[in-house]
Length: 174
Image (cartoon, rainbow, N blue to C red):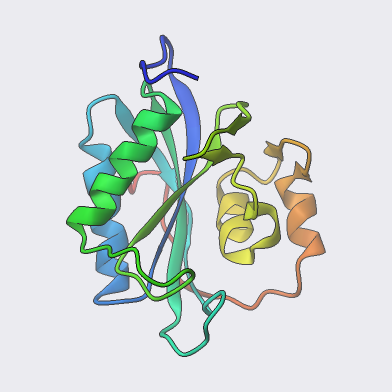
């Protein structure tokens, strides 16, 4: 993989999460910031959910969503962009699975499978996390995650819905 931009548009899915500060405002601000990046266009945003923390439970619930974007950036460039947005939103990388002002993860990047020291796509644990799969299903239930299956089938394998929908968002939101 190179750091050069792709020569065509790639469809990618980004998971968003936050549980510090004003999480819903953080997600909205992150989507706006992402949509202002050269070479990135937000196409759709899932419903927004409230979920229990994954990992340490002594922290606030998370606000989660997924956005579908179109980009000419490479996966590594997109990762750099997401990390810059996280930083601008006060993200401090301290405790693994700890509380955070903003978390942005590339879940899928076209049909590419990437495994570098910085980046693994598809996201290695996305298929087992309701806070990723349920909002992903809002956007494309028939989407296939390489070596895992269709999103709607992955959703059926997860425990019953444990998340609260806190906002329905139309595709015009982005």
